[in-house]
Length: 89
Image (cartoon, rainbow, N blue to C red):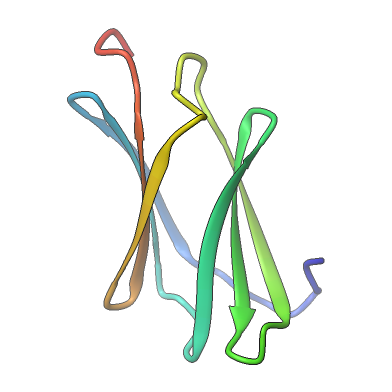
């Protein structure tokens, strides 16, 4: 469950070849991040290291994205999600 405390990440969504990349910058310190698909949205969860979820970012996904598979990675102050899309998007 998301709480009302402030989280104002920079969000970038772009298509590079066959990859849709969702990049979230300016992450809260000492947090763990994960992602899941719910309907036609990517949900990016932030939780304290004690496991308490304190934020959930909703990112709409374009039609045609392969929601069955995606990869996540943490790179410094960024969290990225990579998904496959048809080349026509």
